[in-house]
Length: 289
Image (cartoon, rainbow, N blue to C red; front, side, top):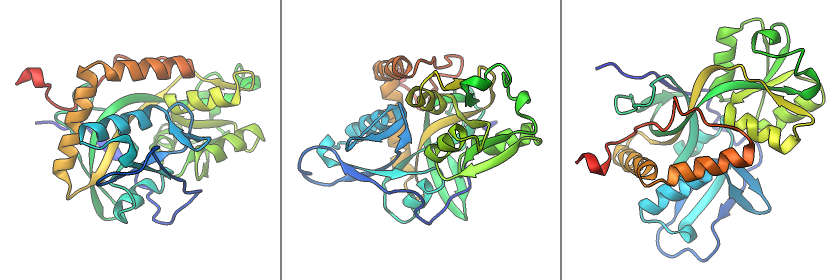
């Protein structure tokens, strides 16, 4: 049986880069708690503001945790960057981490190889709950001059350490200069002050940065390259947990919650999820027996 190609971003830093923010859901925890690693600087996807986390990945994490038997008061969110997310799994800081990974498996992930290795440590990945094409975010003033990926040859593109979109871009356009930063906030700053000419990343993340920065100042190219998927990583010795998460993600699609969350993200960010890539079948539906 052929397997879909799945590659987790391998630049895993075990040092805690960036600011760590730990937030629990409102209320006093009763019983066991679940710690979840989520991004904090991706508006509409994983965003920390005014003491709360929000975005698609946060809502997916809450849904999965509820199916696993955890109430909101039992959830603790920990901020992470692409370079630190798997390290938090490794040191036990989180029970699962919301991650992105390179993926070309189409809409059927049942044949996907869920086991990956990073820095000699094996991990299991559930999902994906969303697949998106990589794009480039440029300054609005450069929209006509930089209309597509090819137009960035010889220019500088900011990528986030540990995010696979930078590696995919370099493989396709080796003449592009890569400026690596710790997180998307730093990439946004580099773009606005002229240190870089574009930011590379999955469409939903860049659409969120555009929304936050303002369409008067930022433009999202329509051109794309490669695909990334959004999933949930657990330790390799927790295969059963991975399977339970996949079942929860499939239930989210089957009961209509996925559609509702995608609609909300599209409305908030002014974008459209590619339905030729989504939703992905990650487990057999209960109706299939």
